[in-house]
Image (cartoon, rainbow, N blue to C red; front, side):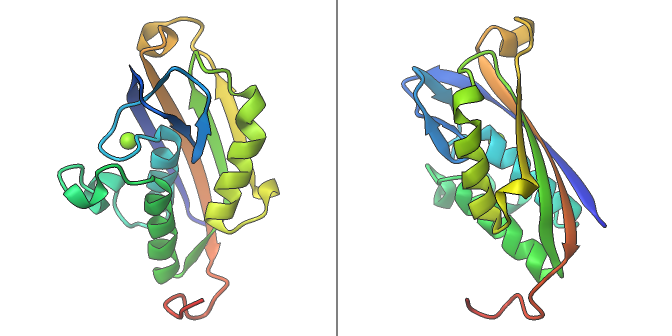
Length: 166
Ligand code: MG
């Protein structure tokens, strides 16, 4: 079964909404980006595209394209799932890790897990969300940036015709 990995990092800026895994967290800073800047969904998107042999998020959704300005990153994940399905694959599971000093993720892991599971169309039990601090080290440890890692596995697509409307 194919697996893919993704990584992303975004600078944190005051006044930006803190959107992580499609969930808006209460925090005074948020990830900068051309889209909503959600590093967790960007890493997830790259993991799906990687597993399906479909390139990367920068090729698919270039940040020079005004269509993606301010876009909710859920759109990218949905499109990556569609591209994987068109290539004959569905997402089997996702294992996600957030690297952040703040905000504390523990109170929000369940909401992120549920949101990602709904985006992928799989049971919550197949989505895992982990969080780590960097022990104060480097720009992430200093609270200047937030990063994410994602690993995804694929299985043969459940639908025989992924192009059919549903
Ligand atoms: Mg990104």
